[in-house]
Structure formats: structure tokens, C-alpha cells
Length: 444
View 1 (cartoon, rainbow, N blue to C red):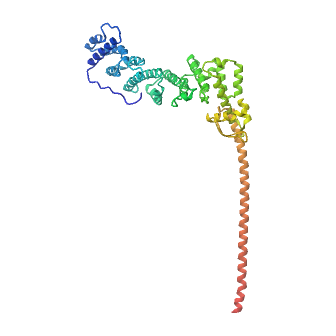
View 2 (spheres, rainbow, N blue to C red; view 1 turned 90 degrees about the vertical axis):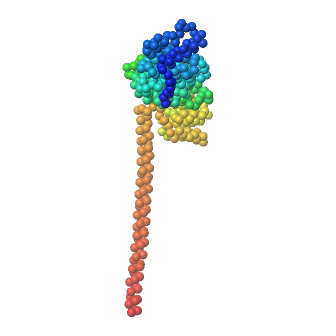
């Protein structure tokens, strides 16, 4: 896609090349068993004589569907002729449409050839050309039809820049985001069997582009059928993905909030995964018996496991002592005590909590935990912890202060004792001199 422009050098007049391509297409159709009356070469000959290049090119482009059974160089010739037209953007969408269909000359390498030709078209266009958007759509169609998401991944970093250059509106941007989400979802459809998935494909990319698509809806559009369909799809993707645990980016969207009225059961389930515990999920299942099993895109075994991890994360975040007994974890997760360590290891691997297991004391020592949501309740918990830390620090400061005063008193005592000893030595020395003088005088 993005890269150096592929320039085609073909040294011959337009008329000669157009006639040559028309004859080639006629022969190709004949070899494919197509019935012809007159042929393309005969159709464009009078147009070329009159200098009606665009009319001749129009017929060549319409007939270019036959080139899907020809080598790549035939398409290169057509692109070269198209570039010489002042109405190039009028012809390229039709060429891209043909390229979106399978190239029959090479069933194995055909998709690669199609992408190569489309890339050539993409790169010869002006960077601000809106036609680039249509070409890119054709590329996405080829990529999805042939499972070539890895080919697209390296180019997605340029997408925002391209959309800005093309001055794409919200609706067209949304179309691209949804198409990319579809391709990523197809590529990650085996996400529940990680042993056979390429590590370079992250199924969460589909969810990320669904979010981007939802962000393009205005507040007035968020209750539309399209917004509702995408919102439900994103909701199911977020709670079903085994490794996605942050729901605030989803719940903040107007289109998701609109589900509160249009699809209250779905919204209730999202709220449980956003901030509630396993007990709430069990109550939900009991209240809506069979609903999850019947709902397309939801798997109770996956949801149950995920709710246990989220519950343990919440338990760790709300524990004041930073030490969780095994029995408390077993009760909250509704598991036997002997399974506690396995679930703690899983929640650590998920990146929700950091800590250390103490088998001797049957406790989980928490080093770091993450709040699932951060609202009024969490602020109160933080305030309580800060008060506790402040009291602890106050006690520590008081002890330090007393120790410091004790040290200062001890130093003053030592200084006084040292001065006393020094003064005593001085007095004795002075008295000795007075006693010596009379002896000297007597001697004199």
C-alpha cells in the first residue's frame, strides 16, 4: 500500500497501445469461449481516429474484466492508458471492482497479484485524491476474501494520516473501521485455540476498530439501527474476549448508553462485567434463565471464568490489609480451597493483580491491584487508605521525633560531660604552676 510510487514506462503512442490492448482482450475472450460480435478492437478504432480517447478508454475499462485471466502486465498497460486521461478518477473504480474478483490465471498467487496491481494504482494517485479511499476499499475486499490480514496490519499505522489527507467524513471513516474490524475478526476467529493462532494476530484489533466506528456516531445518531447493531456487537466482543478486562472505554460511548433503553438485558450484563461480582452474574443467569445460552456470540463458560478473574481483581483492590486469606477467595469465586492458587496465578497472568502466595499462612499477599472502575466508591476507599497511611505516618513521625529528642539530649549530656572533664583538667594544671613558683623562689 503506502510506499514508493510504481511508475510504468511504456514508450508508445496512446492509440497504438489502446489498439494492442483491445486486440489482446478480444483474443483473451475468444480463448475463454466468450461470444463476440465485432470485438473490442473494432469498437474503439473509430473513436481513436476521432481522438476520443476517453470514450475508447471507457470501453477498454468495461472489457477489462477479462484481464483477471491474464498476466499482471496486461493490467499494467491498462493503468498506463488510464493515467493519460484527465478523468482518471472516473475509470479507476471500475478497474478496482474487476480486481476485487479472483484472478483466475493463478489461483495460488492471484490475491497477491490483485493486491500488487491495486497497490500500484493506490500509489500513482495523488496523496489527497479521494479515489484512494475507493482503491483502499477494494484492497480490503481482496484481503478479507483471502484471509490476508497480516498484509494489512503493517499499513494500519498510516490509516489516520490517510483519512486526514482524504478529508474523509464520519460516515466513510466508519465504513472503513467496520471493514477492518470484520477482517480482523475473521483473522482471529480461532482465538479460543491459541496454540494454532499466529502470535502476530491480536483478535482485540477487531474490537478496537469497532470502538472507533462507534465513536463516529453523533449524539443524534447513537440511537439509530446501525449504531445499535454495532454497539451490541462491541458489547458482546468486550465481555466475550478472554483477555479484555477494561470496559470504561465502551461504557463511556453514547451508543452504548443508548442500549440501556433499547436492550436493557444486554446493558445489565455489561454493567455486571464493568463493576460487579460473580454473585451478581449468577443472580443474572438465574433471573434470565437460558438467555445467555440462546444469545448469539455469548458463551457461558467463557463469561463465568472471566467473572471469576474480575471478582478476584475487585477483591484484591478493595482489601485494606493487602492480605487475602485463601478462604475468602474460595468463597468469593465459589471454588474449593484447593483451587485458589490456580485462580490467583491466572489473575496474575492476566495482569490484573501482582502479589505473592503464602502457602504456609494460606494467604495471598497483594503488591499491586487495579480497580475495574474508578468512581465514588473507589474514591472513598482511597480516602480511607490515605487516612490509615496518614495515621501510620503520624505514629512513625512521633517515634522519630522522640528518638531525635532523645539523641539530642544524649548529645548535650555528652558535650557537658566532656566540657566538665576539660575544665577539671585545666584547674588542676593551673594549681600546679602556683605551687611550683614558691619552690623556685626559695631556691633563688
